[in-house]
Length: 335
Ligand SMILES: Nc1ncnc2c1ncn2[C@@H]1O[C@H](COP(=O)(O)OP(=O)(O)OP(=O)(O)O)[C@@H](O)[C@H]1O
Image (cartoon, rainbow, N blue to C red; front, top):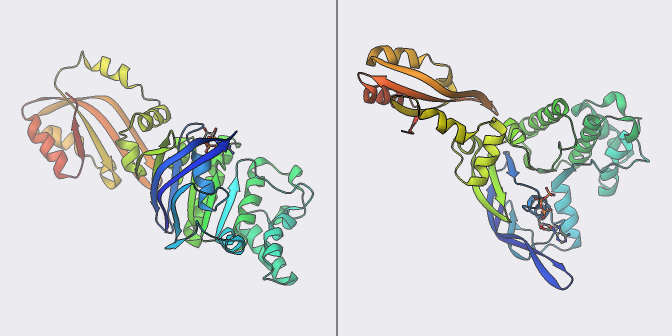
């Protein structure tokens, strides 16, 4: 469990304190994938770099499995960095070392394993990230996706409990992004590793995160399970992120509804109910007609979800809504 308690951070520039984070509190469950999303300058990098103390907080506490790490000395810091691995947007590989040497580097620094054990561990790690055939290449000979796989292998070398991902897929094309995200998810499941990532892309959050925090102007403005935040975004910043990702233009939709008769409702399906043939049977049983005004069906991580905006009219609209509610469908009456 990672806990941030009322953490703040200000940077001292030319004798002045410039605030970057104010009163941030978060709990990140062990073994989960936790995403932090925000626009440029919101404070994402500052926040993630506080977790392994690449930056020191100016106020508040950071706890890792109950231990306050904010006061750690140099030797404690080395231990912390072994427990908390990190990968970066621009990979930060050593250009003069081969793939295998890059991955071996943190093992040599840790000084726990002998040469043969290091070679064995490097082979395991390269197999894990699918780079066994590239061990003797140099970073310049690799694609972006392969470079990030080296970064992941290197970050996992000392068997950390936590992996921090600082915009890890922002320099990659969409297809490579998906394959790197899939690798991160596999590692999370296989090793039970906690993953904390920062991103400005809602698609990254939707693909692999369990929970998400939205950061704006140095504060967390919304936090919750990804399905909840995606399907019912509340804060204007969150709504902008979700609507952009979903190509939804709220204003146009509401204009369109002016010409439609009946009660307008939005139904949200999560999990198996997404695939149930409920609309037709309820319409028949309650003698209601419906027209579909807007809809989306997608997967949020492993969960199928759907959202349909309907205009309902006919004999027993209220009974139809009660039937939807009884099957666990969330209902919002829009008009
Ligand atoms: N080393 C630093 N010295 C002074 N100010 C800084 C420093 N690092 C960040 N800041 C400031 O702190 C605020 C938050 O920056 P941060 O890099 O954490 O945001 P971000 O959300 O990660 O943005 P981006 O996505 O552009 O990297 C910004 O106003 C930034 O200018």
